[in-house]
Length: 277
Image (tube, rainbow, N blue to C red; front, side):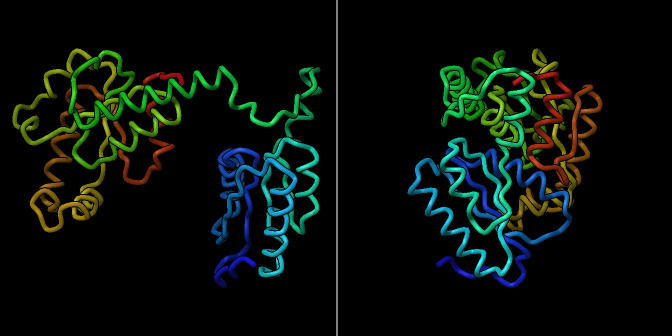
């Protein structure tokens, strides 16, 4: 039997898939955010690709229903009809994401769906996967200005003070979209010279800036180097003011990462620089 959820959980949500479950979770989470501040226990059940696994998943859902005294909500991207039917018999509110969209698409395209598991791993998607891996390697080798090699291949180069969110953003762009991203820190020496790092001028059209509030920057830096001048609020204020002045002076588009998710930042960058995945 699963452990009883803490009393503050309003409901339990399962994301069930014959793959990783990321699609079901992403779509389900997007829908659930429309319902305010519900406290939800969220469980992903990936790789449910056999009848045995389907029965085990159903058992877990039914057990959770008994513990919660509410039927769980199940978001499913299961393709196999027989496996789906097993899960539909669970004591849960079952939301079949594929069935919701596949039938209308069949009617519109006048083509029957293959209902084949693993179609996301076709040759075309394998090539896309390889592109993402190359982009990740590129971003890692061009993190924090550590290499100028092949910088002309970058699709975007992020600039900003240390700990403003450049590295996680470049990696997200690479992993999610296959975007080759580099990033350069803006440091006190740059502010003293009132210039960007020299190598960046030839790639100015690819630059995008990130900033952050001094208060948040001080918090983040104190986690890394507590009590240091580097993390002090006064120093963070000076660096942020100088970085924002430089980006305005150089005509670089920029945004604040303080209250934005990585997904929002990445989407904004792609729109502003007209990048295509």
